Image 1 (cartoon, rainbow over the protein chains, first blue to last red):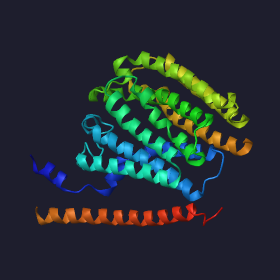
Image 2: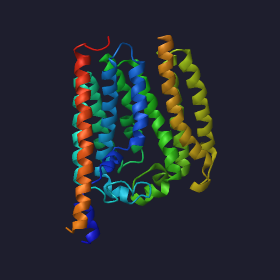
Image 3: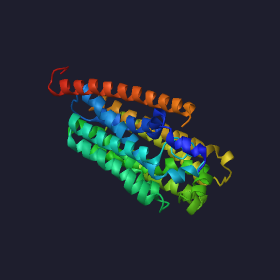
Image 4: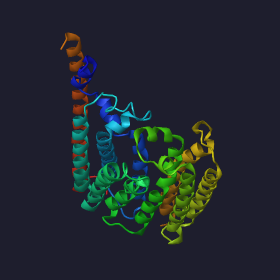
Length: 302
Length: 44
């Protein structure tokens, strides 16, 4: 044992590293979709309780992220993108991350139940358990389709936000769940196309590594088609009005055009993957646009 | 532990204690606000 590692483990982790453990940047999308689910729901929720509900969604996501990093510390150490996270970099011991993650999970679920209702709390609990056990521990190291099922974890926030207001789960939150669910594969695989060398080094079975890039491009296109149906479903089922319909149609057409371009390309050098990177960046904007449109539409027409 | 290391550990502990204290204070305010909202004392 060297003195360097001794010092690192003896020194208490910096509080900022606990914040980093919650992946604050990933949280923004979770908070936004959760907030949209809450705002699109019929009925009234006291602003303080609405704030608490969103806080609980954020804390639950942070808890899941912490537990993910507790479990994957060894894998993260092998990837350039994740090697500087608190655990692989040795700035925090694994037990602290575990305790922090478990504590935050219980806190977020109980607070959600007390402040809003226990259906919202139950869905929040399911989403944390799903992310940690189904995605991180079970599917991610085993199958190249990991992200497809695992993406469901990220699809829960609008359902939780909705349930916090209404105490039930109706057709629209389910439609929004499906939209994020089928959006996740093209979003994530676009990223995996240009960071695949990292996943290969860590031995994670990501689609480009296992099935090749051509298959990944085909799968991106395939899931984009299903996502397009999910995106149009709210307006076709008359759950939302013409504003959402127009935004969804235009934004999805652009998404499909970019995914089609990615499908036809055969570039293997990550440095020259402009369209792939563009699709990834646009996919984030796309989700923001559609969820913003759902809220605006519900406020104007519902 | 050298005095240098001890100083570093104390500084870490102090900053963590301050952050924990601030978070607890924020929770007190939040729980108070939730209670008021629940008993229908504020707003609608």
